[in-house]
Amino acid sequence: MPFETEMETFRQRVAHSMAMGGPDKIARRQAEGRLDARERINRLLDPGSFFEVGRLNHSDMPDVAAKTPADGKVAGYGEIAGRPVAVISNDFTVMAATSSRVAAKKETELKQQAARAGYPVIYLGEAGGARMPDIMGAAGLASFGGGGWDSYLQAMSRVRQVPMVTAVMGECFGMPTWMACLSDFVVQVKGSAMGVSGPRVLALALGETITNEELGGWQVHAEVTGNVDRVAETEDECLALIRRYLSYMPPHLEELPPSAPVPERSGDGMPDILDFLPEKRNRTYNMEAILTCIVDRNSLFPIKPDFGRSVITALARIDGEVVGLVASQPQFDAGAMNTDGIDKVISFLCLCDSFNIPLVFFHDIPGFLVGRDAERNRVAARVMNYMNALALVSVPKIAVIVRKSYGMAFWNMCGAGCGADFLVAWPTAEMSFVDPSIAANVVLGGKNGIDRNSPEWQAMMQQMVDDASPYEAAGRHYLHDVIDPRQTRAYLGRALRIARKKRAGGIGQHRLANWPTKF
Image (cartoon, rainbow, N blue to C red; front, top):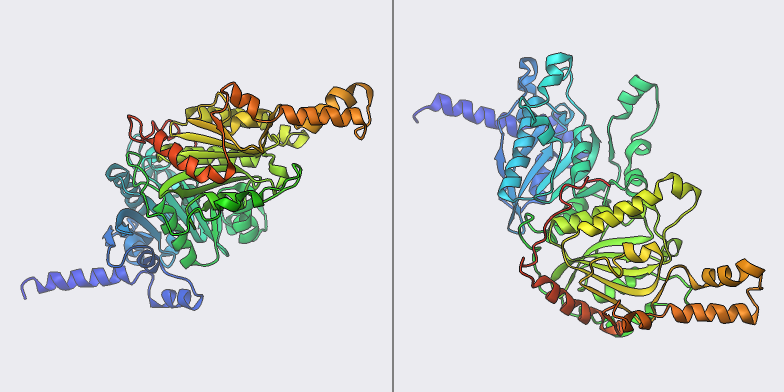
């Protein structure tokens, strides 16, 4: 065969790259029940669709060039459900997948090419921070800037053009953390950790002893920081969540989200939807049960369900079309939104506006949580940031007032004057500056100490409740209608079709595409 020597060299180099960190390291991962970088890609993508770039990369440090197949990052293109994506998978068997000049160049180029082509980007994270000694010294540090005047800025910032997803699948320090903070959707596998620096660095630099779990385990990021959108028990579940999330997303900001067939029995729960709403106005309930009745069967996909739990943000479908839901959750703090909830909603507004997803708001909110802690957590500034984001939303907005909607929260949930294409209420709605019981106490009890059990106080209370009824607002055309709750799904289906059929064809102006990705 001609060129046999050259072809043998080629085969050896390819085999060396495909062997990753070697059979011993791969065997140890298998014994731990963990997938390697290439297995993760193969399980994520459609079979046979992976098209690798940078396969023969290696470190530019001569003493470790032979020890760094693909330079610790496996990257390329593929398909999920027949739709193209770009993917980067950290290879922890190669120097803990630490970041180097060559790997950084490959990752940055892939992300930029994907944005230009209109392909979602998926980052499968398990890596240490920057590789040492590569980054040490003046030239080492400066070289990580990529060599161009703004090349590092381009690599480490983002204006949303295509969806970006990060999976936290092991120890993720440095680069995987930065990628997670740039992403629209982050899944963390239980047992993994994410942080700026790992426990070893903290122990050496600060004398601080801490475990991975305490530093950046799933509970930290799902419940406290909000930097994780979903938590997975296993790596396979993590990859399945990524595939499902992308099923709601367009490939890029200039396309509509994909439609889907309407599952059988969708809407079957609508005749009984009022069974989930207590007749006593001060009783809690699970708003998710109401949303499940309204949206297409099995389509509800919560985002950040463990963070800011008094408000639900979720993707779903109505009549096969993707919508974003922002709904009060009275099961927690009676639905009063705290600063975590505000940050959660702002992040969701950015996602939906960037990728042409109409928004539907469901009110049952007594207001924002206030008090000393809230003020110290800048609640007023956050409320106004929320209003500013809402003002920039350019996709269709529809709001349904289910029960309570009081004070400033009424407007933050897209109330009157806040750009709703359609604003409607259920007959059970209450709209006022404050809860009627508080108002009655201020009007009477605050002045002369009238007993709350007295007939006078009870009469005032009932008057306040009656005044909060939605009919006067509907009569003056501050609401578009008061609807039968059992017709909510049908109403929303028609309203969404009307709101979408505008000159832009449902494509928004993407004015939130460069809003800071994490709050």
